[in-house]
Image (cartoon, one colour):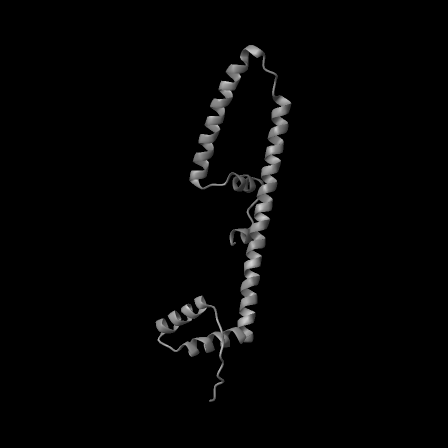
Length: 143
């Protein structure tokens, strides 16, 4: 079989990597390039790349959908809390404000400790809320 001779220019980094692959596999640089071209020019290779890209895009879409759902839950949670707080919060007389601030600082410290424990356990409060509201879609867990 005759082979065509080509003189090509490649980036120095590619030349170094080509040399490394050829040495590692114990073959010529020409055979590495021929195999790479065969793979790249093969119609099956294009189909495989498109299928892999499709799977990646599907996975990213599922992740984006979960993020969007979680963000919606968080927004609704904050909105409900603010409405609840503003509806129930009573004005504090001047002489009690420092005591109320101290109590607020203590509650906030307790909140941060609980949040840290929750995060360290690796459980998501958003997921827990979602599980209480409805079952988790099995396809979402696959991503």
